[in-house]
Image (cartoon, rainbow, N blue to C red; front, top):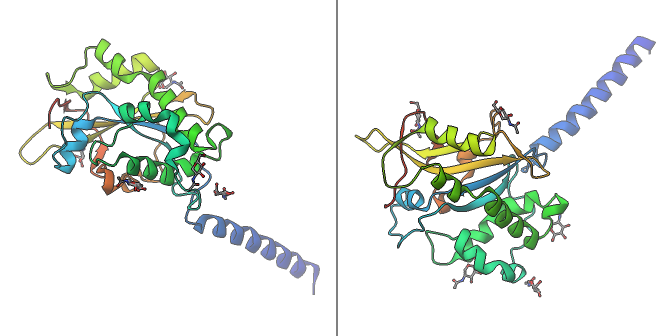
Amino acid sequence: MKPVTICCLVVWCFCFAVYGTHKFLHSSPHFHDWKKLYFVYHWPVTVCKMIENDCDNPPMYWTIHGLWADKAEDCNKSWHFNVTEIKDLLVDMRQYWPDVLHTNRTKFWKHEWDKHGTCVATLKSLNSQKKYFSKALELYEKLDLNSYLFKLGIKPGGNYYQLSTIQEALTSVYNVTPKIQCLSPEQGEEVQTIGQIKFCFTKDFTLRNCTESEVYSYAAHENMLFGTEDLSVCNDTLTNYPSHV
Ligand SMILES: *[C@@H]1O[C@H](CO)[C@@H](O)[C@H](O)[C@H]1NC(C)=O
Ligand SMILES: *[C@@H]1O[C@H](CO)[C@@H](O)[C@H](O)[C@H]1NC(C)=O
Ligand SMILES: *[C@@H]1O[C@H](CO)[C@@H](O)[C@H](O)[C@H]1NC(C)=O
Ligand SMILES: *[C@@H]1O[C@H](CO)[C@@H](O)[C@H](O)[C@H]1NC(C)=O
Ligand SMILES: *[C@@H]1O[C@H](CO)[C@@H](O)[C@H](O)[C@H]1NC(C)=O
């Protein structure tokens, strides 16, 4: 063979190897190369409204939906949720991370662990169930969303808010822009309903802006069981912050 042919062959082999490996990695069902964390709050009244379930007295404060990786889910199916490991956290879990829809709260926590906890557990700071759930509770307390909204005069059940008012209020407190999700107006209505607020963190738990578009759609990811598949990014229009279902 001529040197030039050999050279081509080598290059071809190299490209094939690289491409093949690349393809293999990316065809794997999980995306382990996630970049940021989402700490997700949801508004229980809206969650109830979406499901049209008769939730009894949903809490009148923002509760935890979860702590997620931006581009990964169900990362380790053999790492089973075990409620005993978080027994010391249960008092706080029941209060701040309730399942507003189902009476068996353990199911919600198991779901969050299976889908998200097993992914973010690649971080040393989150590599056990105890660490994962504790960290989420810690972020909840640190962000202290309920107090800030209240102090900023944004309260449920009163007037409708322009979305930008809520957005600007949050940015003034946190110096980052969280992602706010709403339930679209019902037929014949004009106001959207606030449902979820996602804060973005770096892997070392520094708040960061949530900008840059998501390659991986989380609309599909949020799951029917917990009824958030109907939420989408809010528009800058009037927004209901409901105090009852
Ligand atoms: C999955 O979880 C199991 C149980 O904790 C652990 O032994 C195993 O190393 C994990 N696998 C991966 C790929 O992290
Ligand atoms: C659950 O965790 C507890 C406490 O760490 C442990 O004693 C128990 O064996 C675990 N159960 C299972 C089924 O792994
Ligand atoms: C609640 O759900 C968990 C996880 O799916 C299950 O192990 C447990 O048996 C359930 N408890 C009740 C009282 O149904
Ligand atoms: C987030 O974005 C805003 C506006 O673009 C900027 O002023 C702020 O410094 C950013 N915050 C961080 C932590 O990057
Ligand atoms: C925002 O507006 C777009 C385009 O009109 C619409 O498709 C989407 O459903 C709206 N989102 C909400 C939460 O209402």
